[in-house]
Length: 225
Length: 300
Image 1 (cartoon, each protein chain N blue to C red):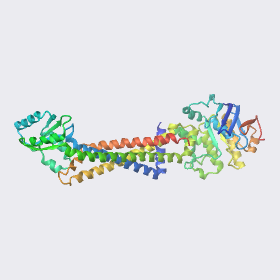
Image 2: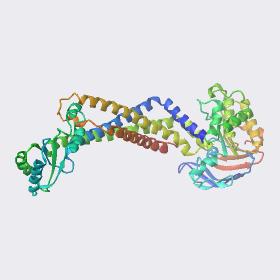
Image 3: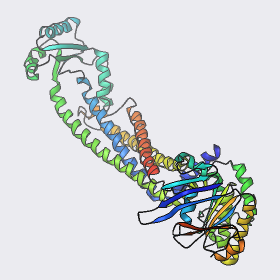
Image 4: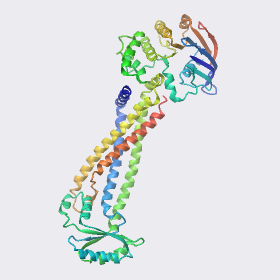
């Protein structure tokens, strides 16, 4: 599903975010990217949905090298990738329903499909009955659930999560992880960048560890070191 | 398709609402600059009306009293024919032709116009001099032509054109310059309004891009917003132009007859054409301003 070949990305001559990185992620895998701040986790995620491009190397997603993908094709790539962020990135003046529906609306799904699929995904993330609330009327955990619902509503092949539990207390974070695990079990590949040692150690999924842009460990059913 | 259209219009009007002050400023600036365009075009048309009888290189007009006989007209024809050294060409504008011209030149003096008819309007010989013939030379012939039977008077283009031409050039150029600056200001203001709208919605745009919306899908509501600024500005300017022209037309009617301002009244639906031009320019200015902004600032 995802393959990186000798990928290097730098932001300036002195700042190399990712250096000569390479790995394969199979369809349906759950992978943690771990490492200290500035180790290149977020840069790796940004390269997977073509927000960033590497100077060198190839990034294969769903069978296509996306490094030289024409800009016009990028939106179609992104329709197969869901994104979850630490700060949720919800639209504050839209309701829960509208936030999730927005992801379908902007890629042209008809209204009847939206009306059918959004409640189903809100049910899945445990937000049934809160469709009409605004983000500020929700707890942090609930806001992150909206973000997960928005990322998953288009049934992406890949889910990229950048510190999704970073702003949440441990109990709420565990709830989000259970949700991501459920989504992963539907066949969606999940790649999650995190600092959260407890979560990584509890889940025992594959761990790719970065240090100053270099992959220093790639371990199946790994723990945080 | 329908859901996309619904989305585009909803987002456009949401943006109007959120950006109300800047939107108003952009529309008002567009309206004022377009009104400048309209007034320039109308005044130019007014001056053109004033000079219409001198079109085609005519430098001298011999006005002949109504009721001149064919023999008397023949005498004038012969006299002009004999002045071949100075006269390249001449045409006779008979009563219907002169009445048609009067309807343009005296559009603002309906009282005078009502008194004129085919039976009492002076007819005209319009004289085009040969190349190189000085107007002063023609003036020397004035006396000879004025003494011909039933000649009412002889007029020279130079006497009217020089002043009117100077006025036309003076106002035309300066109004055009002012209008260009105002239009530029309108485009910049629309550009800035759309840029601000994009900035205000940067979070939405980021989400849209991440879920796979195409750049065009994101751009279109912003471009439509700018287009509407221009079109609404054009509509307001058209209303302003209509009010201005109505006031001017009724105002000119109260000027002393023969003051010359009557010809500055624009008739024949030209004002409607100008309104259409203003709408088109407004739409173009809006599309340019918003198009540039939407293309340039989408990477938020």
